[in-house]
Image (cartoon, rainbow, N blue to C red; front, side):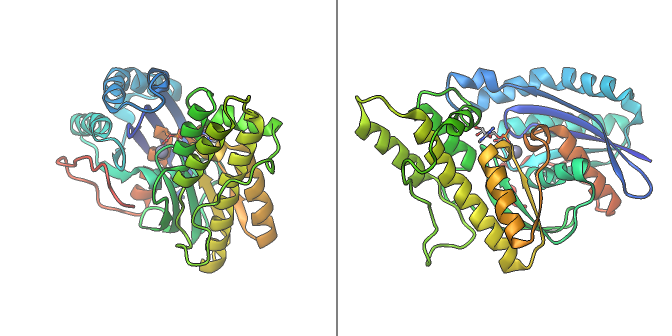
Length: 340
Ligand code: KG4
Ligand code: ZN
């Protein structure tokens, strides 16, 4: 039996998770504590890197204490540590990496520097158990929008597509600003969209032409189209619900159409959606519909596991340990642009 500590600080969430790996390879979630600095960023309409780094410094030790209390464990029970070493904000990542190194050195346990995107995929195993491979992961958050082919969680993840400009969540946050809705924009747009007509306005679907990259995404044109539409309408009142619904339909349509087509292209029978935008009601509904029609099994972890957290890094750590992957050395550094 192995206890694994996971530390995540790539953006604005300080996450500390604990899992137990047993001899059969089963992974059990013991604690998942998160301290978010999202409210400190709200008045800027986006994450301010310096503010996030400072908040991680302040939150690290208290979040760690809460996790150990929740699990009823002592620091000395830890057998291995996994920390996000990229991709993410440089200063934010460094806080987690430095803390993880200090704990690993003082406890005399192995340290695993691990990829944040792989962690998002691993999060699903905490809710739905082992992932069948190959599977396709659609990662959609404020910082990333990627299609990953997963042949082995610990050993083989390949990026087969990504956004060429804004991330899906970033588009939500920017459109929310245009519509005078609060930050982060996903939840208020989702709520407004449920009251609106998704066919009210035909917003563009980026990169869906026959000669466009099959697995890549673009949301910058959509965001601009929404801003232009609103500008052209002023000073008339803006039908916020219809704009939100039409925008949301365009995002969900493109994400699900491309992800399902990638599964079919690659002969993959399981899709996982993770990241903050995976909480979106229309994305989940349309993904369920289209996956069912294509005979694909869809897995979406609960929102708490979709957003950034330390438990996902601990879960990934369990897979690295179980697969016998070599631990990192103590000169591990953060890589803001770390590829999968
Ligand atoms: O994964 P996450 O917590 O942080 C990272 O960006 O890594 O994702 C946050 C993003 C934000 O852009 C937020 O607007 C979006 O997820 N989001 C949503 C919803 N809830 C959160 N987007 C659409 N619909 C939602 N219900
Ligand atoms: Zn993330």
